[in-house]
Length: 169
Image 1 (cartoon, one colour):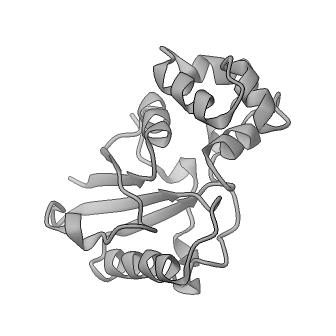
Image 2 (image 1 turned 135 degrees about the horizontal axis):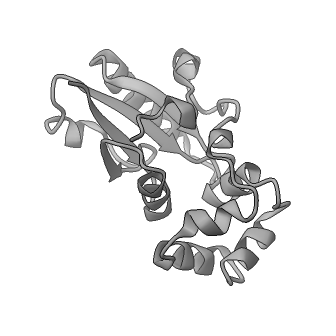
């Protein structure tokens, strides 16, 4: 039986995936900042890894090198199943997945927030954030449909995935 590990950058991505019934272990681990080898001993021989990452901050050359080295490590071990790139950040990705939203300010308003930090707090505290998003025309199949960032080595472009590639209940 295949084991799935979905690496995400933050709590909001983790919560979204859990609410969307993605199966497998969802772990907060930023491949721009940390070496994946540190958690590799936890992988089973049949662990398939998906990586959800954002591109909202300018990355240093060392961060870009680390990210690509992490993908290389996962690929070399036969574990890299897919990379899912967010449009800039979590909030922008949700806006693109909601037909009723035009910008992040509209998203903030839906959650009664005035800025990104307050939105993230309220998203995490909401009993059913998906219902709030669905009122705005949320379509999970629109998540992570963006082109690969120039910071990602061309060897990994074929691993570009979207929500439809994730294992769900």
